[in-house]
Image 1 (tube, rainbow, N blue to C red):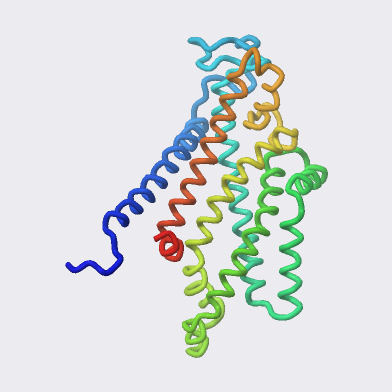
Image 2: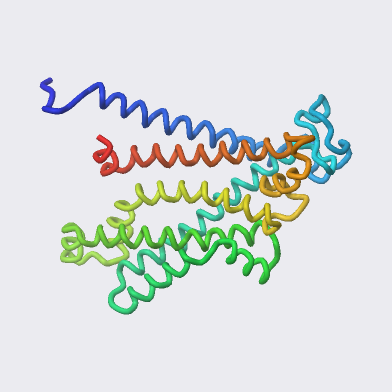
Length: 287
């Protein structure tokens, strides 16, 4: 087979292997934390509120990673925190996707003052600090994981909505949309059959990135006491509680910090791999 001018098989193979390695590494890192969260649903070494281990006990047979300043098993706290992190990421992304896609599609179809109003609304939500929004929601409800997830999801929905608006407007300008309208296809069928299938590769990549940001945001809110209350062991709360004893018992801060970094890096690598795999434009730009 004759090779096209400028085509380099070795370079193409390298790009393919790089994409595969990035996606595989991301899946392994995020999957390990996800597996830890899944196991915590069915089994924990100790109860979350069990303080019988002794204060700041060293790693040993009874406690694989030792205990915290209250005598709670660190491995139990880490497993519970992994479940909270996954719940926060998935819940926030679900809210962001539902609200953001709805607002983005409406803004793309809107004309005149309605388009301007929805665009301004998205800009206001983007500029509104997630922490302040969380404080308002916590004041109206209480400091719970649900409140934190709701605040993070609403804050991220504006970013998703703006992206969806741009993507949908780009698709609406295509000739096949005009042809569909000329043939009498209704707008709901056009959205379901043409618009969403054309924007989902870019949208999935963005939602993967939003997952990592949501995990970090939840940890930050829990560090400030605005996340899941005790005895729930969010990684952010673990970091806050362990900072006073870091020099004597560093595992209490290092362990949740390492897991948090691994999960976020893993999700970002998955997003990067999906971008190269699903987005043809990105592949062409990197070629």
